[in-house]
Image 1 (cartoon, rainbow, N blue to C red):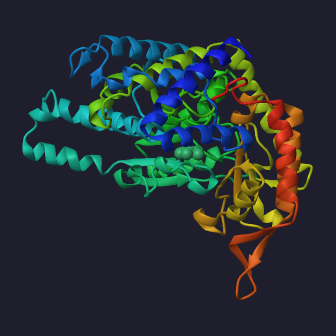
Image 2: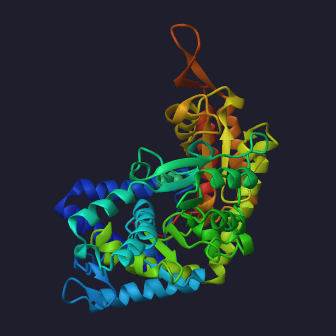
Image 3: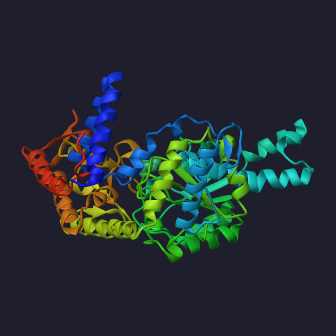
Length: 479
Ligand code: DSN
């Protein structure tokens, strides 16, 4: 047992006892979650395991302080320690990503994207209008001028990757506020290669003339050329906004460099901190100096008061991500994804784009005659946690889907390497090959119910246990 594990065991046991004295069900659920996470193969591409120092940093009285505003310019008194926390986190983020400016207040990825959108609107639409009208801020505008400006926010255009090829709801789709704020057009991928077709994207952008070009994804298993994205944005006068929530860890870990690193090319970059970056649950925004003043208005523009305890944990996670150990981790995430993809392909699976060169893999479940929902459920029965996901031109829609998305960040954090990921591929193919859809009353394959052949769940769980036991989560932690 390491010293950290010994201390953490003692600390967390006492903390859970205290919590249990107030609400035993919460202490129980917290213990149970650790047991569940320890006992399953976590392949959700957007999840990870934060370090014990990051987890510990989240549970303090920094949570009790209101600090709306910005560093040194708060709407509340007594913020000197929050100023320190936010400054350290922002400094680490700037250095880690080589950004001119970092804003670490967003509470989540959606919040970070909202800050990005509104700061771009503030910079591109509001500021020029104020200048034209000779006003310092919106409160100085006449009612008529304000009404004109307010309406102009709703006339702006955004262009992002289509949902069914891997884009994200926040990239201008109607269920999210971004789809209600903007006129939206999506770009897809080439029908044959399933890769981004930059020439087609340019032609579409020339026609649509978006104010904002969004790059980034949540289910596209390939790298993006951000230099080309910037060329396209420049050609049509768009601001390039990159949502790197999924691959921030690969950028921080210097796996994505040169034209694959969004930071030197984008005007604004938003991200989460808890996916491949392995920090606390939260978000942040990076920007060029030009966009910094408007990003800095995130709170109270679209955010509530910053979560100081989470900003502190972001600082700790960024500090961890500066290390050689994190670089090694990030490279392993990408290497392991290739092994996982190859392991699936050689056993007969079909993958969107034919493979991966980032941290995620999208399995086409039609090869196994099941929907994404059936595959996700059968895998869960077998101790493998994934999520169903649409594939390009998905015949089953966004609810049942025809895909399962899997990723390597979490299990790589546990120490899984090539041998383990090849075995994971074997287990996945075994489960999916032994899953059959239940027939509907009309005799057609249904989309939700399924049968998993006898013994498959048990043998998969047993094999998974061997892998998990050899690579324990929070080794030595006993609560
Ligand atoms: N929930 C994240 C994901 O799973 O990709 C994005 O919203």
